[in-house]
Image (cartoon, rainbow, N blue to C red; front, side, top):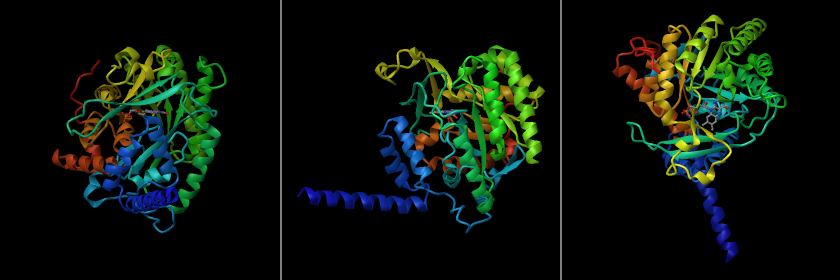
Length: 432
Ligand SMILES: Cc1cc2nc3c(=O)[nH]c(=O)nc-3n(C[C@H](O)[C@H](O)[C@H](O)COP(=O)(O)O)c2cc1C
């Protein structure tokens, strides 16, 4: 009897998996994903859910919006949907088939690039890469629900409670090998427009975390080692690195040395490798002004606005998250998703004005649909990234944002993405 029910369970599970596989292979927007797979994934806690998504992508179990680009059968495949040609854009010296990309943090160890391309993203950022393999001393990710935006789609934010921004990483050597293998394969089989940026984290592992000098070396070594595989490099200067903003000299030193190193690497690779800096939205207006001046002075190519925002634990309501799941020793919590949208868009708009539109901006923070993406673009972003809405809504969100954005551009009379960049920032004032 017991044996019989096990057979039934096995038959049921295998037919479910085969059906899933069949549909998923065919269509990234299959209702099987939005109605079955994502709700099942969300039964897990936020960290395990994300790990499962990553596992599926890493092992080729994710859906595909594009045909297989790496089997040699499809050598010329920029993903140009004829009705969305207005999404085609030229940024940082490269063509992009869409301005919608996956933000840093999802694929820290550069294990899912092919799968992410096949989901339909125009670009992605791997990392943050840390110098040595590390496990976060204490890092816990929670999911909580917040008010939806105008689309009334299910919304959730991510709260991260962590020590000094330290995340898990397999370290620079591992990521070097991953990127090397990826580039070899890609150069051989695919010449689509997909771009991969490499984001360097500056936490100083194994030496004194408070020594800014040492951390400058970490960034410079990261550029030296990884930039030949990157379409662009990012130095991620964030919360644990408050010292960078408090001490203008150390920020200046970081940007000066990083930009000297990228020039060196560009020379030896015979191509211009853009360097960007990723910032927190929690900067004061003064700090934003100082940063803009330094970025222009050191000819940094772009700014990614923004990372997660930090709030005090006491602001997280009991209704959203029981106090019992939080570590009482850690007072600050990082928040991604919808609550970040307006703060990060304000800083984005400020940075556009402060740099006179001369620096490429990537807008990230709380983007849920095509309307949000257009708001980021009109605030000054040439490219837009998503993280939380992807982990919340699943792979269908990419096609949806692209369709909505393409349609909205037409409705508002923009011929293409670049015509909309900064359209609303030009006339606005700087905001605190
Ligand atoms: C769980 C988690 C981990 C993240 N890890 C990184 C990281 O390693 N490096 C980085 O630059 N940003 C990291 N981020 C920030 C995201 O790249 C993005 O800037 C932020 O979440 C805002 O976008 P969103 O509202 O679309 O999530 C992380 C975000 C989350 C939620």
